[in-house]
Image (cartoon, rainbow, N blue to C red; front, side, top):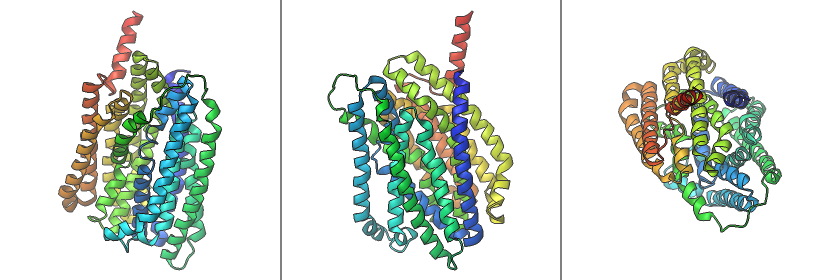
Length: 441
């Protein structure tokens, strides 16, 4: 099958599942806003943002490089190294859960959050963080083992089913706060079960890795060299809007926070379509690099960027037209998010065109080179919120976000070009096409 067609078809299936799951999540959020009120939806957004940020730290970065090492060890036939790697990854998650349960509430008290929604629902929040971290690790490993559907469906399909079931079971509570509390408990318990079943898929996939390579020394130092910087990179990129929501929780009202939170969730949904493209092609890219086939690696990067860029442009146009109607489902006050949502989705085009620079830098053993650009993006976000949000509200928050995303995307592209000697932008695809045309003449 043509590589463009394969990438588009498999990523379309994954994105379709994500879209269906997100539809259920958006339905729940719309019902929360309509039945329990926008203020309680804002509290829900804070809980989910906190869960995501805690969960991404729990594996200590091993989930961010799990796809790479799973693909590498599968290609080299090094099952023993893979088992040692996943033992470390899951051990980090369990150890972090123990620390969270012991120290979480005292830390919230020291931060002046002893009466916050997080403190009031601490145990279900901790369980949700644990389950989410497990799914992050499981999904990364399964994608690296060329099981992308199994890797993504726990989060994209089964989690939304648990969420809507929990809401339907609690929506009739006379006191909304009590229904909200019970909903969090049901979601937490259900997602823990899903995460453990998902882990079973990882265990059953071990036989996909041959055990034929000669024994080599432990690669623990190499794992840490890749993983540690990716904790910060993942926090500031994949969970950029979770950080932003927590920053904005002190500058916007709960209703405005709910509106912006819905906009960021729509952005995250459509950005998953781009992530799905890279998920399909990542194992092949990793194998090309492991086999020192640089030309094949460059070609695959270019192909993935081309498909991702086309998809992002199409999605931007679709959101510009359909976004206002989608937001109206949450209530009349949410129509204020239409223009900020369009601005946010334009940032996806910028990110897609500039390419997966952080990934390429890690593959070339320069993961720390990403940190300055990522740090600059976060600093830009904080300054942008401080300068723009007081005067422009929701639009100020959207402008601050797109400026920060553009700065770090261009910065990472430049760093990858200078250090890895590889143009990861869409320009690489045009060069590959030109070279192929010249060779055919």
